[in-house]
Image (cartoon, rainbow, N blue to C red):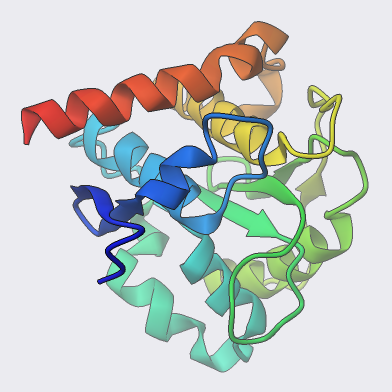
Length: 214
């Protein structure tokens, strides 16, 4: 353990260190740990008991990107993905094979009712190639089809170079909320800018609340 970077919160499979939490305090790019934590919070708390929705964090998404198609079941079978209606994936543009990271985050969602992948990118076009490649690979695993259903709905665009992770989190939260009641992702509209502007403080308050509860 790094005594200069202690663990601030242990939440299910997620560990947040002081350095992770500090990213929320200023104009910083969010790392894998923060996004993994929030995806876990969405699944374990916000959508607790809903087995139709799955949130796949950055580490597993990265493994899916780099693994041969025949090995996808190693990661996806334990998650029972073929029984889910909606699958949310935290996607980044990292090209290094054995590490997460990268420089840009976006959200990829598979809608089983629509047999369609939806890509929400706060910097339009940046992650499209990554999203298309992963979507095609996953569709073959889900359905056996090679005919890719892929859309990029209108998405709120970021106004700086560091808030892509916040946009990813806000989009996942917004779309997940609507998936509780509807089966057509393309009708959900876009997040509001105020959601992005306030989300860092909201996550910091959430972390403090979870620390008190534990």
